Length: 394
Image (cartoon, rainbow, N blue to C red; front, side):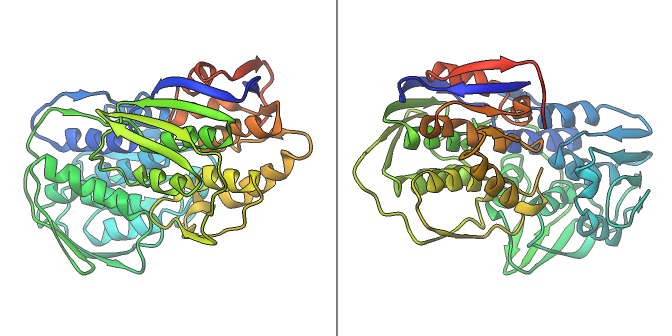
């Protein structure tokens, strides 16, 4: 479905309940599958990614197709590798099949797994023959994907000899690794991280009920709306003040764009100061690359020059996010039809730009369900006029 978007007043006053964090949800689902006892998960994400993982954890089929969910593919690869009796092929969308997976596969095989490539070396589909993995010493590059490391951390307690993981090179998206370790601690698993060696002894997860936090990554789009509006008062509900999510850093970044935020009793109130601001000439998003699209769009809207670094992983996401953002920012100045490239964050970061550039059209806008299923409903609550079109253009 394509969507035409317009905001008549450019004044935004609304209360929004953000979606549950899919990053936390997916980690908790793997922990639950590995736990020997059941526990309750409240506020589990209803995103496409989490639903894909939830469904496929229960399947016992010979071919598992996870669609476009990279997190599901990586977490399931590690999980299935250590599940005795499994013999399956795991695959996904064309984009999934073009995102290198060799770093994870090599490390798992070094630990004793039996994973092979079905078509092309280093890429999905994978043939996985599940077995009891011994574990022990292994190494992996930290500059490719934090999800590789998180997937190994999650299965580490169940390995016969645990895991001593040497992480080489600079770590990207480190807060996501910290999130995984925080959840291990919550479920009773101890670890030790000295210099670049992460050690987890064999142990059992302790079953505990958990309520999943709302998603700080999604707050970025509302900070962006605040920045592009004339005036605003936006309340975002159910955000954890002591969040384990690294993207809470969005508050500090947008503060430099004169967006004020106050977090009390799990409600974030966002307002703006229309005085002139000074954004830094350089900013490093090595820990928070998912915020890139929103930030880049804001800077473009005001012709603010800033060198953004730490974008090592963005060319291997749902799309090449650097190239796609540059292309669609130019489209804002011409036909105002924004391609989303099957990337949820493209749709959500460009929609607020209608506050600056008037009516725009988001092509294949339903891609938002990957992380934020009620995004369009919430946009309407903020006063955006949204018209659904029947045609779908990618």
